[in-house]
Amino acid sequence: MEEATTASEGSILSGILWMFFISILLFWLPLIGPLLAGVVGGKKAGGVGKGLIAIFLPGIVLAGALFGLASMLTGIPVIGYVAAMGGLTLALLGIGPLLIGAFIGGALASLFGFL
Image 1: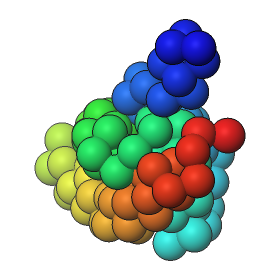
Image 2: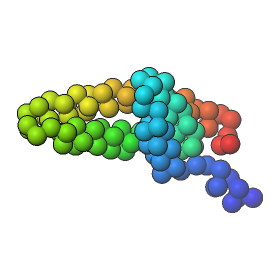
Image 3: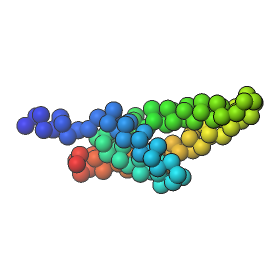
Image 4: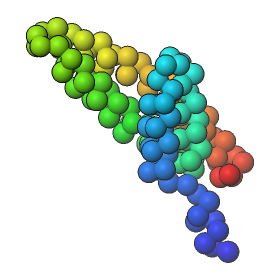
């Protein structure tokens, strides 16, 4: 009986992966995409605390990837840096809805169990 409760708790790694891939797939939805990614990732993480911990890696990796890719698009370093800072700002703005979504998803996982 103890094995069933351990398997249904979820994991931070599962929440991180779900948040990361859903954020990538729904990048074209400015507020709804990160919110949905946060809800699913928080639910897969298994709780509010785990969901909030799982936010930081996808947010930081996405922001860093956008910064690096935007800076490689131009041959002039200053213009690449300005474009990269714009991408970094957009990625950091997406963390707010991701945070709210992870809180909602973690609360759902805590209240109704892991489905």
